[in-house]
Structure formats: C-alpha cells, structure tokens
Length: 95
Image 1 (cartoon, rainbow, N blue to C red):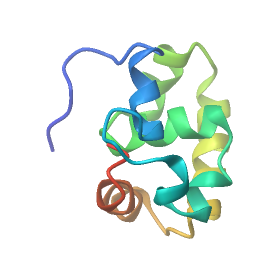
Image 2: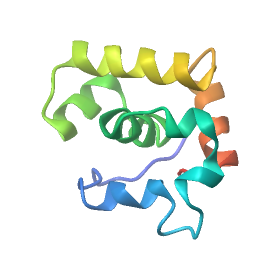
Image 3: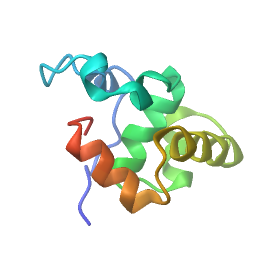
C-alpha cells in the first residue's frame, strides 16, 4: 500500500469535504454527513494508510482517542474494517 510520505497538514485535510474534488459533502452520502469534523480527519488519514500512532501524532491526540474516532467512523459508515472503509472513501472521492 502506498501513502503520502509527508503527513497531511490540517489545512490540506479540508479537501476531503469535497471542495477540491468538486463534490459537496451532501453528494458523499448521509453517512459522511453524520461524521464530526474530527472523525472526517481521522477517516481521511485512515484511508491514506496511516497507522493509529501516525494519526495520533499528526492530530496531536492520543492513540486511544484515534481508536475511539476510528470505531465511530466504522460504525457510522457501516464498514467492517479499514480496508472496506478505504474502498468506501475512495468510491466517494473522499481521498
């Protein structure tokens, strides 16, 4: 799996809301709309292949908090694992 070599800045994470891809958040489905801004950041990084530890360092939160957000994202998007979540995000052009 490939991923960005440099961590994403919080400002660059705004692209997953659809503004950069030309898709609005509403076009990405009700599951996406139900995510909090922090869950959207975690989703973006998870889909890019970051580990929980890397996400924690990037967002300056604990690994346990990342795990909690990841669990919420999986539940709200009705995905069973990170691979399914990555496919889901890619299909909606979130990553």
